[in-house]
Image: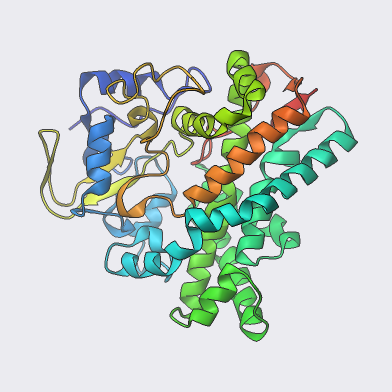
Length: 396
């Protein structure tokens, strides 16, 4: 029996738990005791993490998973639990392949390029509103959350005025303290909303992604609802937290902020480095071995769950020398923040475009941007499965 459980306590808000780095220095793969007593594995090395994520002998279906932390992953153990149709993230090929094929064309680099003028327009509108209201402001509420929310709503064809409903459901879902019943209720609430929206779109289609999928005729209403749920919830929560936490990281690293503010041409490089350095998907992903697999000399047996620490892998000095330091000029390509292999984030080009536009625009508009409280007073999302800041009080 291993006495290692998943390290969770951060001693510094921008760094993962120190134990993860120490474990990675010792070895890339470690025995881990999961919350239900299951004896599985923790991956902390970059090469090992990539290997697991790329290997088809590891399943992403929840039925075989064990939770690294107490709580909602026990939903998968409930009698009668099944992955809702369309929730392609939690499926394996060939089911997963079918959904990805239908959606990949919607998220190409070229398609995201065509969205950039609208993203820039939305960004400027929110900066105008911030400037008009005057300091201080909560950057999460005024900037980081509304921009990706509005973009994903427009892309999917979801009325932005309904955002409060699905944003509240998302908060419940991503809270690590949420009870299983409350998580199920939050999923049910957003799914019911989307199912109703899809009925309306069948009667009156528009020029949006969900209408396009309906017209394609390959997905049932249940599947469309599941796909819409995944894209809507993931599409605003992840980028919103990157914008909030990324700004906090820059404000607490003034030389890095100055470098990006004074030379917006490095925005693309800076975005990749912030994605790597912050790694907001700080718990998991998880995989379950469907047969015996050897990873970095360690035999993972069929049925064992593997937890991959992306924050530890993204700071592996063998791949990113000096990785514990934020350097917005570092070529950080190859990081695992969007995952790797067949489940690599579908919306990664959209997220990149939003950040590449939003960070320089914010610093250009407010060159004197600074925290309105001490760094220690900023409430961090340590209680959420996607890391970030709950609020970011700023002034200028």
